[in-house]
Image (cartoon, rainbow, N blue to C red; front, top):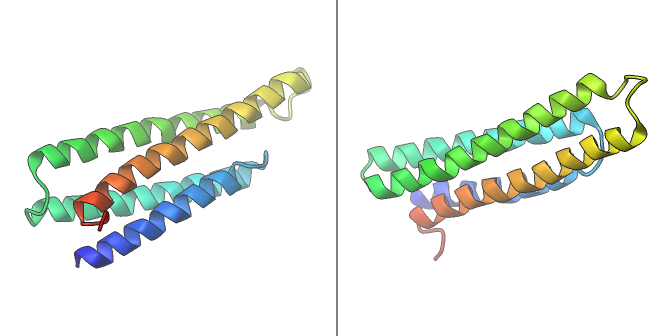
Length: 135
């Protein structure tokens, strides 16, 4: 069972990294929203896997606390991207926003997406280690 969790977790990690890079590469709102949804689905899968491992006694209380630490960092980053995207959507069609301001908002979203991808990777790698993913 741990091998299935590990392999699925590895695929989620690769998927999230690609999704965040490709999804946020342009300024298309729908692509970024899809990337966020995929990232959140991978997060949900990995948190469920970690919870299952904890309930089975495979991971300790200290390891559970570390998973929660990584998870909280991820969620904070995820919410920052969601907020930045919502802010962008609110102003992107306004006439009084300068092209420079709009470009700065787009760049902020891209930067946050990269940060989110890295935070997701931290969580996934740690869970992989707990399931023997470093073998």
